[in-house]
Length: 245
Image 1 (cartoon, rainbow, N blue to C red):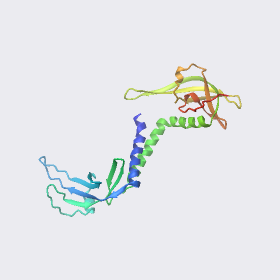
Image 2 (cartoon, rainbow, N blue to C red):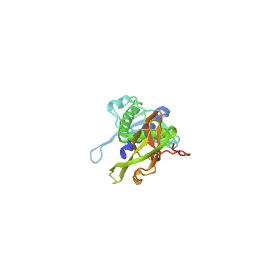
Image 3 (cartoon, one colour):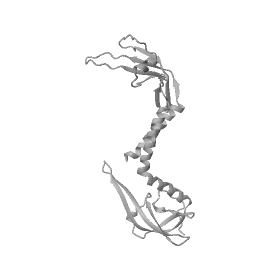
Image 4 (spheres, helix red, strand yellow):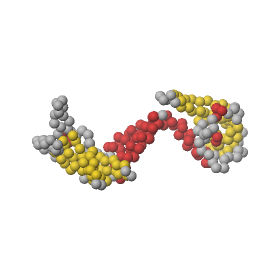
């Protein structure tokens, strides 16, 4: 789902900004203000640029909108001499750069720039995105963590499939997203009582193709028998496999 990619995109965006804040380097730059003369339509647009050098190459950044008060903080005089093709006002402005393996991200550092505000905004977005991801796929994450733990440390016993069921939804692309669950039972080796479970299947075996009462390998935690999974329906496998007791 598209929503599942949002936290990843924000994380990459935040990692880029964090690298820029923490590991970036600051170089000299020059801010230029070009006054836009009215054109044939009677409209004008000012042009703002910050130029800096990266190696032997001169690059430019469009800093976006800057107010008159901010321009005066940079040292703009009250009156300007307008010469077509030349900047009406220039000022030195440092530029912070992160340059890794051909990737370059640069931002000008103005007197009013709060560098850490970038991380604050992105951190809030990341928190919202992670909450969305937890709501959509929290069950999936819990299953993966439990599966991994029990595959590594669990005790194996015999169990049987009782029934299967599935849920799903259609995406805009008309792809059907399917989640299949298996209901199973096994006798607790310590007490002999029947234990039951329902598991989201993440392995290669499709339980819907198996008959009822199909024998499976159940992994459980002897210290906490309520924690158990079916080995055949997990995404994790061991080299030796399991010999059921």
